[in-house]
Image (cartoon, rainbow, N blue to C red; front, side, top):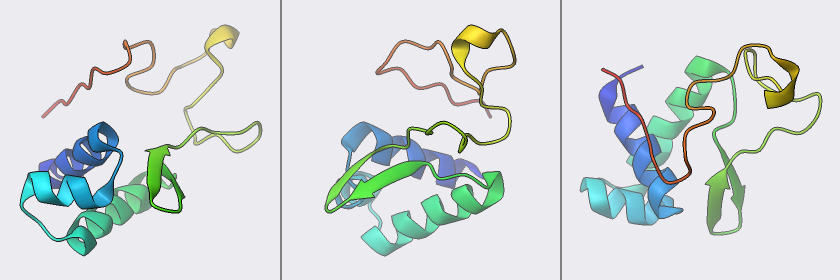
Length: 93
């Protein structure tokens, strides 16, 4: 996992668009898509739901959660960033 891929993830999450994220990062849209694909491969989970031209953070459905992701009410381990106020992103180096 590299910082450039994480920056691409944050840009897509904040803008809701691969194209706008590419503009912000001064990259091409395929380069941003590739960085997101690499991250998704590294964590073996989908990061975004892509519906037409709209992009939104992936919401796990029952039985499809990534390893380590649990229901907040069950008292088990939470994924990084769980409980963070919406609109804030944490990036650790």
